[in-house]
Length: 164
Image: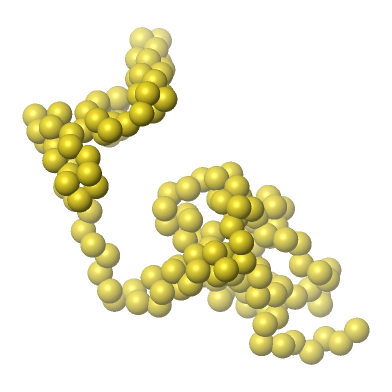
C-alpha cells in the first residue's frame, strides 16, 4: 500500500481547510451520511475529490438556508455534473469575498404588505402575518391550495402555542 499523496487526496485537516469547515464538521457529515466514509482508517486516511466537491456543495446549499436533512436528499438527487456545478458556484462565491452581495429587498411596511408588487417574480401581491415578535409569514397570492393550507395550519399552531 502506497502512502504517497496525489493532488486529489487530502488528510482530514487539509480537506477541512480546503472546504472552509472544521475537521469535526467533516467527521459529523460522514456520520450523518452527507459524505461517504473515507477508504482508509487511522493515520493514513485520505479523502478524495468527491469529498471536497460534496463539502463545497453542502456549503452552497447551506447558503440557501436548507437544513441538513434537505441537503442530504438534494445530494442524493444530484448527478456528478450537477454536484460539480453546485460546488463551483460555492467556490466562485467564496473566491470573491470583496464582491458585495446584492442588498436584500427591504421588508414592506405593515400597511403596504397586503399588496406589494414584485413584477420580477411574477407575483402580484403578498399576504403578511406577524406570528410572533420577530417572526413573519409571507404568502404570495399565486400560492397553490396546498401551500395556503400549510399557512393556515402554521398560523393555527402559533395561535395555539400563544394561548397556552
